Structure formats: C-alpha cells, structure tokens
Length: 502
Image 1: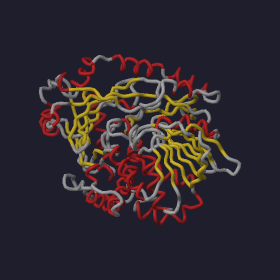
Image 2: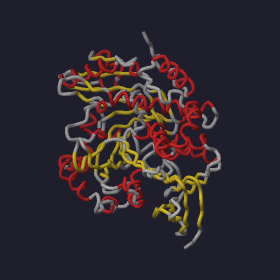
Image 3: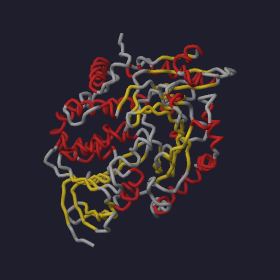
Image 4: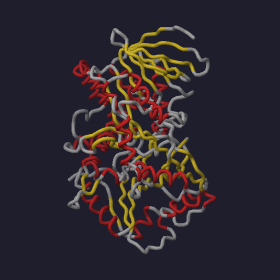
C-alpha cells in the first residue's frame, strides 16, 4: 500500500475514444494544463471503442432507420437524423484539423469511404422508405441519396443480397455514397499516441476504485495498480469519467446529486463475421434493415463492409444478448451493485416496463447458429453456415432514468452527459451514436464544465471546427465547402459523389 499523493489539473478515467477526444481538445485549448489518464486495461481503445466491439459506422443518419420516425399522420420526423448528421460533420472537421496539422497521420488507417444503404421488404416498409427518402432529400445534408425499388438497379448496388432472391414481396433500398466506415479503435490509439507526445501521463493497468470530494473542492481518486496492487491517491480540479459501461458505478461513487435516480441496463451483442474472401469481395456497403418489433434500436440488423487492420471484412448483426456485466471485462455483479436506494424505484419501474425487451434478449441469447443463419439469409439468401463465425461485440449500458415524457424508469437510447452543477466532474453514459459524435459530445462537456473559459477558447474551437455554432443545414454553401475540404483531407473524395446544390 502506498500513500503517494499526486496533483494534476485534469484526470480522464478510461482510455476510450471519448477521453482521447476530450484530452486532445483540451491540449489544443490549454496546452499548459497537466492531464493524467487512468485505464484499467493494458491498452487504449480495448473496450467499447475497439473495432471488434462496435459497428464502425460513421453514424450520420444516412442509413439508420431508427433516426427517422413515422408520425401518426404518416409524415416522417427527420429532426433526429439532422441532429446526428450535423454532429458527425463536427467529428469530420476535427479529424481533418488533426490531419492537416500533422497531429495524426494516415487517415486511411481509421476512415474509409463506403456507401450507406437502407433496405426494406414488404409494401408497408417500402412506402415508409420512399417517404423517408423524400423527406431527407429536401435537406442539404442528405443530398446525393438515391432510392430504388427496381430489382435490376438493386442487383447493381447489392449483388450479394439480390443473388438467388425470390422476389415474392416488394423490396427497396436507398443509397448514398458519402457514408464512411470508421475504425474507432485505430483512431483512439492514434489520439493516445498523440497525447503521449504532448506529455500526457497515461497509466494503463490502473483501476479507479473510489472518488471523493476534498474540502478544497478538488476530487481525490483512489487508484489501484492492477498488476502490483499498489494504491495511489490522485487529485484534480476536473475529472471526466469516460469508462464506457463502467462510468455509472464511478458516477455513483462521486455522490453528486445529478447522478441520483439513474440506472443502467446492459445489452450485449454478437456479430457474425465472414471467413470466405470470395463472399467478402461481393459486398461493398453498410446495409441497414429495420429492427424487429420489440428489439432495441441498437439491434437493427445490418450487413457491413468493414476495414479492420487494412483488410476488408464482412460482418452481420448484431444479435442482442443479455449479460449482467457492464463491460466485456466487467463483473457479473455489475448490474446488481448498480442498484442503490436512490435508483431502486426507477430500476424496478424500468423492469416492469421492459418485460418484452428482457424476453427478447433472452430469446436472442438462446438462438442456435442455424437460427442466426436464418436471420442472415434474410439479407444473403444463399449464405452458407461454414462461411461465417461469431465475434462477441462490446457491452452497451443503456441509461435508465425518470423523464417527463416516459415517466419513471424510462430506458434511454443514446449518449448522455451527466455533470455536476459546478462543472468539476462529468460522466458519459449510454451508447449509440456514441463514438461518431464524440467531438460534439466532448465540446458539450467543455461548454458545461468550463463556461468561464468559453469566450477565450472560442476562436481556437472555430479554427478546429469551422462550423462551430452554425447550423450547416441552414448554410448549404458552408456545408459544401466543409464537405469538400474534409473529404480531401481524410482521403474520401476519390470515391465519393460530390454534393450538388441548386
């Protein structure tokens, strides 16, 4: 046991894409601040940010049907799609700034151009997709999207999906060439290499066991070296908890009132990965379908081309599952120990409300390989069992809280920042679109937690993100300029269709 006491300006808990992004932003804004990072595992980007633990979709709402709801009057609400797309544009601008300033190199190691598609079957779904297409394409953010219900055109777009398909029901798809595949694991590792060069103190194999408020207002962390068992005490004026599923427990330990009445519901996932290069070569897109009734939005089935370790892969999934762990490397007691007196009623209400979801997750866990193959064959009619293996994806912990709209124990699908009123501590909870919107989310953390510096920092933020504070949707000219420059910098322009504006 050690009584080492160390002081620093900022502590980041968890070496995932969120901490990497926040650390990189702060190092640009205030290079003199000392930053310390603690990560329980041996490397950065090993949990939720890892390339095998997420879908790798640059979430821009180009293909995800759950971002566009059909209203009771039959019209399509595209407000969430606009929001997600604008947030992804912020990430693209920041990554471009990093590449242009040689802070990270070789963008093709983490981002590749890839068409994003939505595909549906059945007359009702085809009608929905056409309405969605018409609603989105009136907006400059979604220009360049195409719609087709012509089997010949679809054969050109998605030959693997259309081969040997008996067309006894209508089928349609939308396609947009400005989509991307993002390797968030590779990006996270690049950002941490950059932070190391900027003298950020990165400590792997270090677990934060407790967080307490000191009398001077700073936060004191009890940190344990996982390998030696030695305990150290570190303090900082500002702490960011970016530990993926592990964030909830640490938020509860901080004792801030904003963290009360919040629970977490873990959802695990399994992807099928194709081991036959001939099959992999026949598909070049991310194709998202519609979630089954009762399935959580993160279980939307999709057939994805992925670029991992500079090799083209093909993944299908995710099949949802249930594990009480909050992290892949977590404990089976994570869920039960997250239930506290202040969130007990919230958790019980969520349990009662989500019986059908729980039943769905248990059914998914019990699926045999052949049953999973049947689901895959809805996408690839002639898929062969021997061509596909399984990979267990990351754990996602959905936020449960009491809301005005949903009442007690409402399950939230999305990413949520919880911060103390004085801005001294912030925690990131939730799941998709997560990593894709990391830059927007971390700018929100900065704005909430350092309001006194925002006037001084704004010119630098605008240098990094030219559209900061501006709606791109309402400024098509700026959108076109940014799209052209980010595509060029990130090496996406060769294969991308240019935006055209009337």
